[in-house]
Image 1 (cartoon, rainbow, N blue to C red):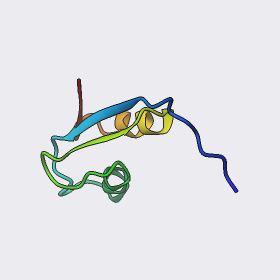
Image 2 (image 1 turned 60 degrees about the vertical axis):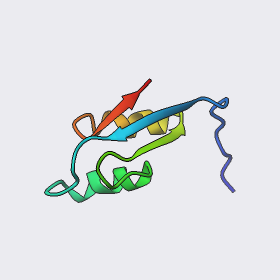
Image 3 (image 1 turned 30 degrees about the vertical axis):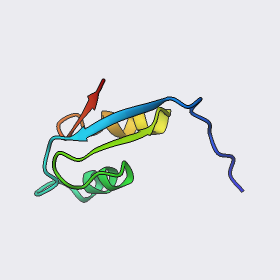
Length: 66
């Protein structure tokens, strides 16, 4: 059983600003993993290194909101 990592209650708000149409399948899967998939949708995700890495792979499709 894997240990769950704690994010100390910190979250990041992200918004999808780019369309997944004509994008590689890997990028579409990252969007779904972040809880996105439709344009202009906003979600809050835990501030973990895994989520930060996923966001860094899609700078043209997601925006970090303050």
